[in-house]
Image 1: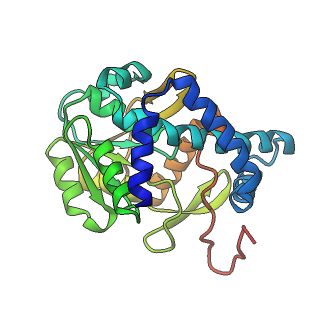
Image 2 (image 1 turned 120 degrees about the horizontal axis):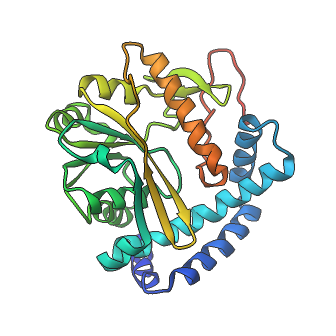
Length: 289
């Protein structure tokens, strides 16, 4: 019941002007920054590890921004998934190396956890008719999970896969010339992860980008989606030259290094509330104690 009510409320919010929604998100984000102590401490700890030379005041400002942008992007899913197509087209822009989407070369889009990632997914499906595969975790509330799936499949030829569906359908779609929207920049635990640097800190990182690129004989590009006052801008990067190699660890370290460069442009828009360094090498104590 709670989930269905929430989805209904988002349908109502979709009718509001964007500045009103953004103002609501700003207010809720500022309040959550004060009330959500555990997540605030995680964000501040991550920023202290990744930006040790920044002032404490600067890191706190980034942490506060990440709460605000989180709330604004959550409310934006109302119009993103319910507003008319022309409204979404007006507010969500796709820029950069768009030629990389042409043709039928198997292509993996590295889409790190910036808060605008769902807007970026919509931007892609609005601008290409290529078969598009994305991997997401199931939401525990069935009504919310259905809303997420319908929203993400609203435009274009989109196939949503659960993480438990295995590798075969992913590789099959790639080899047929499809696109894979991949988000491998979180801590998924020790299984199948490698410890490679992320801002100089050893971080458990799944090598799926390198693995899928090799198995699918695919090129790799990145897409970073940033929130703007008028909506979102999703930027496609040129192809990653010489990627992948036969060295999955080196490939995964390069992925994290490229991610750092993307984050440095707008640190406050990255998903710092996630315990990115939760899994530690054997013998190392918890970073978040």
